[in-house]
Image (spheres, rainbow, N blue to C red):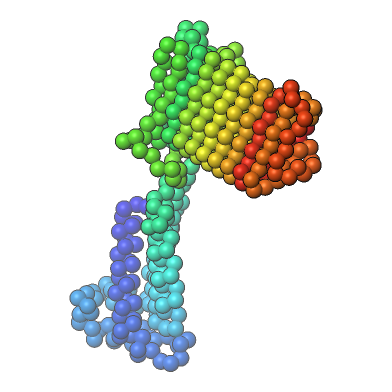
Length: 388
C-alpha cells in the first residue's frame, strides 16, 4: 500500500469516526421515526452550524462541504465524494473505499484493509492477518506469529563434491528443522547438496577424511518444534555409482524422503516427522522415530531394527535378513516377499489384535519355523498385521 494512499485512507477513517460520533450524539436524535426518511442536507448543515466544537474537533468549511454530499437515515451515514465512498452503519461498521483500496471497520469482524493484492485483517479473535502476493503473515495472541512465504527463499546454496577427487565414504547429517530429500541422480558428479530456505537455518557443509558432514544450527542452538513459517529444504543428490559405508542421519523436526540410497550401515533418528524410503539397499539399518509414520517399500534393509514411539510402521515388498519392528502407539504392517514358511515369526500386542496372512491370532503369535528369517513385530497399543 502506498504511503500517501494509506495516509489518505487514515484521514478519511478519522473523519468518519468524528462524523459517526456526531451522528450518535447530535444528528440521529433529530431524525424522524420513519427510518426510511432521510434528513435533508439543509437540516444537517443547520445542525453542523450550531456546533462550535465537538470533543475538541472543530469542523472546517471543507468538512461542511463534504457533509453536503451526505445523507443521514436508517441506513446510517453515506458520504460520496468523487472516487471516495464512506459509509457508517451501526451494524456493518465503517466502510471506506478510495480507488482500489477498501477499508472496513466492524466491531465484530475487526478491521479489514484491501489494496491491490494486499489484504490486512485485524480481529480481536483471529489476530492480525496480512496477505501480499505469495506471502501470508498471521499474528495471533494464541498461535503466535506465522509466516508463509510460498516458494520464496531467503537464501540458496549448492555445494558439489567430486568423488574422483575426494573419496566420500560416509554421510553425516544433523538437521534441526525442515524437509530433507536424498536421491540418486546420474547428473551428479559425486554428491551435490542444494539448500533453499531461511538464512538462519543455512547448514554448514564440511568434508573430513572421507566423511561429508551437513549440520544445521539454530541461533543459540535452540529450536521450537512449531514449524509454522519455517522454510528449510535440503536436497542431497548422490551419483548412483557411490556406495557409502555409512549414513548417519539425525533430524529434529521435518519429513525425510529417501530414494535409491546404497549404504552398508544406515542409522536414522527422527524426533518428529514422517519417513518415506524407496528402492534403497543396506546391509544393516537402524531406524528410531519419536513421533511420525515410517513407510518402507521395495528396499533391502539387511539386518533391520525399526522403533517408533507414536506412529505406524509399514514395510512393503522389502527384503531383510532379520526384522525387529516395534511401535508403542500405532500399527505394525509387514508385507513379506517370501512365503510364510520362510520366516520365523514372533508377534505381540498389548492392546490390539494380530493378523497373520489374514487370520486373527489373538494378542500373541509364534510360528513353528525355527531356521527361517527372524521377524519380531510388536505393537503395545495397535494392531500387528503380517502378510505373504
